[in-house]
Length: 259
Ligand SMILES: NC(=O)c1ccc[n+]([C@@H]2O[C@H](COP(=O)([O-])OP(=O)(O)OC[C@H]3O[C@@H](n4cnc5c(N)ncnc54)[C@H](OP(=O)(O)O)[C@@H]3O)[C@@H](O)[C@H]2O)c1
Image (cartoon, rainbow, N blue to C red; front, side):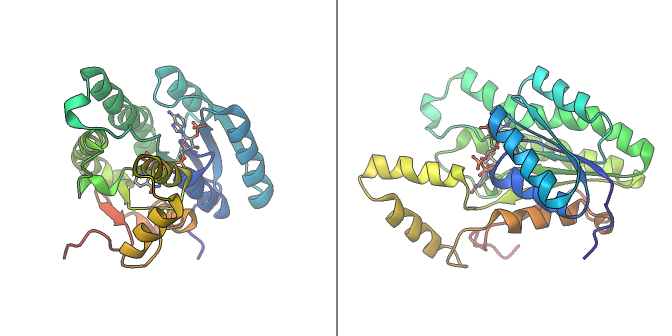
């Protein structure tokens, strides 16, 4: 399906691998030129070269920490007038509420709430003027079903969700949409690293833990970055102008709820 966004420009944050890369690849497959970022220079440059070679689009890598003002400025300098913005960053660390300091909370809010809000603020008004804009925030299914060990993530991401809920309605008449995708378990390094950490703590093998978790999902498996990217690309398409202010859970049905 031609998504009608060939030649559009997108910023995809935190995209050298995992879900961000899945989004970048799916947009590139539809002819979108990209600015992608991650902190590790070699990795983001290699990813940019691979995507450009595979899909024949322009891909500019920016090595930066998107959760800093300098990082955001560098990305915006590389793409001052994006048509599409995919907000993403690493997630806050796990732990327990009793151990989190105010600084831990500030860091989580800075990374997973203020950073996407700042990028939206810098780009949404230009999108409105130009009459086209698609903004997708990668959050987490923890916004809907809180994860006990991830209170920093539950809280910061819920804050972003609340902030954009009203903004999405304010910008819709200019053909600008804002949606959140709430991933469940996807087969990425982040998932593999958390599984390894549980394995070390419990003495069980990472393979056993992973197999048990996948089997507990209604689909019997984890999601793929290709599936995630294709969903993101559709939300960024010409045809998704009537979908806004939504929180789309992609979790293989693991949240057991009717709606
Ligand atoms: N995978 C899942 O099952 C799942 C489920 C729910 C929510 N999520 C959330 O979705 C987001 C992406 O997860 P993922 O699974 O794709 O992780 P991943 O496979 O570990 O990839 C993370 C990507 O983000 C980049 N990155 C991290 N922090 C960054 C920063 N401060 N500035 C710029 N780039 C940064 C990483 O590169 P560098 O390290 O080089 O910067 C890498 O390219 C995270 O917030 C995660 O918590 C994931």
